[in-house]
Image (cartoon, rainbow, N blue to C red; front, top):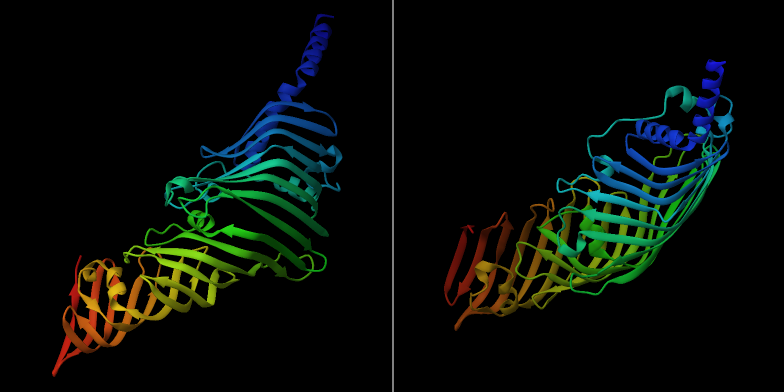
Length: 422
């Protein structure tokens, strides 16, 4: 009788404490399965529905997800082989979540940073129910971008607020996704914070072998996104807006096979300002139509000014998701009195007169090569007339390489070449 009474008491205690016990088991199980540290404040767990309160997900000390409330619908039967939902998962609703993506000083992001516990569902569980069938709903969410080594102070924190998500997932048939949000950002460091609405729409049909994901926005600031993804003190966008943004991630493949995604789309750059460490003055008023193709952003018609000189040209920013590099060719005609201030070594030289300039910026953003070709007639050095001048001057790693510079002063032909160190 004593043993029976003890067993009954234990069963009653376990029943009354089932939610705290299940909460702990769920936190431990999710942490082991995902490799993230999952913490759940409290829960209400039933046979088909669970409510999780005060949910926090962390990886290697970085916050990943914080949510006030998470509602989950599931079918326990489907955990076993022959089920209709993988993992028994049927529906998800999250209220006021905050997703945080951290960029560290070494360039790694939260999701690709080494460390943590490698995880994944056990093989028998993965095979138990192959397709994902579930719906997802998110309201009043936020996405935070945290930069541990920002190029400028205001880029340390960026946020997309009012995030709403509606998804219907059928991984072996058709999946649709609708995401809306508002980016809070400054177009330049001194500008006021503005609101930039954006939207994502997705349709993935595995049976037909078609996938289309679209990001659209009427206007977005240029420096925020590039500042987070591409860190370069040598070449940096400090201002500018991209209008009519339409970016596509699309895939065509065999029915039921994984997609090989490609990127494409276009946008219009307006009032861009590009700061180049080797130049004492930025390129201003940059504008043109840009085309996105996989990991390259290119333009065939770019215009702007530098030192008061109107410029036009073409170029591309490529290897966006690897080691970014720039190829930008510009040309223009102006007066030497304005252009001499572009470089420290020439700022005080008393040069003036009409000149044609062709400039090529190339190589990796961390250390670009700037090649300048110039030619002019009817120039002057202070009070001394120079009949003609042409040559090239390359700027790389803080040094200036002068090659084949030729000038004519009266009846004298002058040639100059060398390396100027700074």
